Length: 205
Image 1 (cartoon, rainbow, N blue to C red):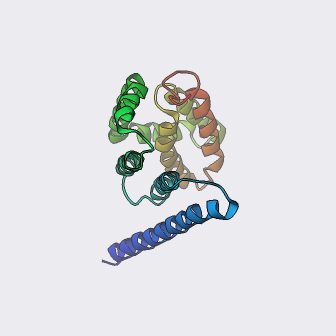
Image 2: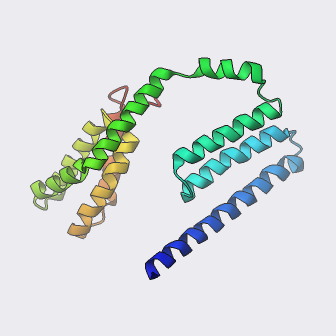
Image 3: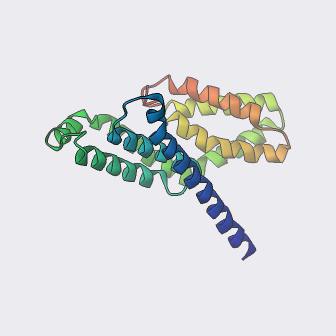
């Protein structure tokens, strides 16, 4: 009960901070253009608030990121159409022609593969194996983890690879009682290098 109560309390505190920050930023967005004499339309201000809301909600993890992105996109489109910023008769056709379905298909397939791999625990297994093979040799472990991260990033989105590998790295170095920060930095660099090697390793670029 104590753990649950503390969990609820932390959520309430996080929610309060998040909404307070969002409210403060919304007020600034509304009054700063007036102060500096910038002619910002109401739709533009509302869309800016929606954009900032996405970052705040993602940062404080109120809801799943998929939900907030879909909700924010719906709100933004509604604001744009109702205020005349996006002409309804032109916006739908323009939006459909602007979608790159090849990229969406690639990302969707990659997300499915990554989710399945994460559920199998393959990353944890390989991380533990590398820790055993290195036999406490930090340089050997650094090379193995960096190479594995780089190679994995060639076939899976490099950001996702890092998000999956960092918890494994931290858990390994809790056993060794050593700071994992140098190894995490090496993995980040290796992930970026591996991601640039293939088109699917770093889809945004």
